[in-house]
Each structure stands twice: as structure tokens, then as C-alpha cells.
Length: 309
Ligand code: CP
Ligand code: NVA
Image 1 (cartoon, rainbow, N blue to C red):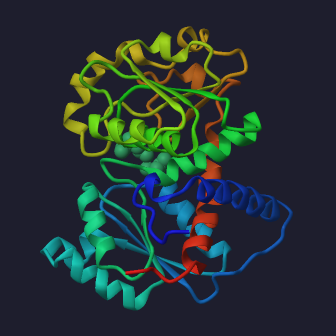
Image 2 (image 1 turned 135 degrees about the vertical axis):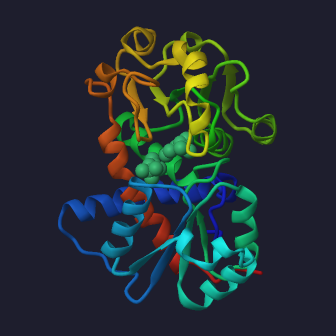
């Protein structure tokens, strides 16, 4: 297992399969009251420059359940805000803690941190990717559908960080991914090009949500304006209207299709109240699975081989 998860392209198909299996196993053991403490004495730093409910808390709970300690570091309370170079912070933290999860704006900052870090670095969301989200989402798909290989997964909405990680996942492990985004809000071309060049699944980008959702097994959406794009909210509301996941749209999908959302959800915008709270929605199980997947990730990265420089 490679030591950093900066994007899903850092993982092999074998890594994905290992994490799915181990997360499911840890989940089952936890539900049966079995206590696993492989990370006693280890600590995880969490440096967050953007808000978070699920990712922060599920990493913290994961670390505690495995016997280790999370240390939350609000970036604004560190010397980072006074322009201490990222490479200095990375080298110092490597002397104190055993892994670090970072939520920030710039993917380059994350990569710069990882270049100078001796400890595993985990992307807890950047403007470009949200890899751990999609790992746990695939665990949810496997739970509900028994497998991921033959699933038709429809992304409806912004071609954003979560969409980019879905594209990377499709390229590494192979499934049928269709993304419906408004014109001008498609995924970044370089992300698509890289994925399509080593793609073992199929990736389709369309501007028609009905086309993406047709016969889909999984329908996935996310906010129209991501963190950092708040000023575009009004403008985006005008463009994204036809991309709302509502009962009319999901009628075109497979009757057993599940509806997913990474949360937080804006009811009445990207998803209707009726669908979010309806029988096809799996969003609460999906949120829970972040914790089980994060346990598998932390165990694998912290107990894995020493990072090669
Ligand atoms: N899904 C997700 O990353 O949620 P948070 O922003 O609450 O961490
Ligand atoms: N695309 C969203 C995901 C939140 C979990 C954002 O970046 O705000």
C-alpha cells in the first residue's frame, strides 16, 4: 500500500479491493462489539482549512476506535496563517504524529506537504478531489448492490471535486460512470483525459441528466456550489435547475436504483426533500460508512511500510 492518498490514482485496484474488504470486516466486528485497537500509541493530525462535519468526525471516531488519538488542528490557529512554509510544517509534524489528514483548497498545497512529509498524508477534500469520500461511497454501493463492476453510476450536477474522484475510481477499478453536468460545469478536461487514457470502465459526460440517469443503478448528486464558491450560489441556482435529483428524474433509472449524496444536502436545490427522505435514499448508511472506511485507511497507512523517499 502506498503511503499517501492524495488522489485515488495513488491506489491500485488491489488497494481498493483490500480497503473494501477490510472496511466491511471492521464494520462487522464493530457491530458485533469486538474491539480492535491496532493503533494504540499512534496519533492522527487533522489540518482543516474548510468546515467539516462528517469527514472530521468520522476520522476522529475511527482513530479513537482503533486505539489511537486524533489531534484536530484548525489551520487558522497555526503558523500556517502567518505564512510559515508548508514544507516546514510538514517536516515538523512528521516528528510528532503518525499520519495527517488535510482539508484545504489547493491540491498543490497538499502535494507540496506530502513531498516534505515522512508520514502518510491523506486528502480530506481539496477543490480538486475528495478521494476518501468515494472510497466509502463504493463500500455503500457494494453493500446495496453486492458488487460495483456491473453498476451504472450516474453523477448529476457539478463536475466538482467529488465527481473528479468518481472519475478516478472508474479509471482504476472499472465501472460504467455517466456524468450529467450543465454546459460549462463539466469535470476538468485534464482529469478526464488522464482517467480515460488508463480507463478500465466507461466514462460518459453529457449535458442531459435524463440520459445519464437512464437505467442507472446508482444516482449521485452533490451541492451546486462547493465550499469556496459561495459567491456563485445565485448564478449556479439559475443554471443547475434542470439537474435537480427529484422523483421525475429518478423515474428514468432502474426501479431499484439507490440515491446517494455525500452531504451536506440542500433540499430543494440539488435534491428534492421527497427523494432525500424517500425509500431509495441511502445517505445515512453512506455517511456511516465514511467511518468504517476511514478505519481501514488509517490502519493500512499507519501500519504499512515506511514511506519510501
Ligand atoms: N461528505 C463530507 O465530506 O462531509 P463534511 O463536509 O461534513 O466533512
Ligand atoms: N463538493 C462539496 C463536497 C462537500 C463534502 C464541497 O467541496 O463543498
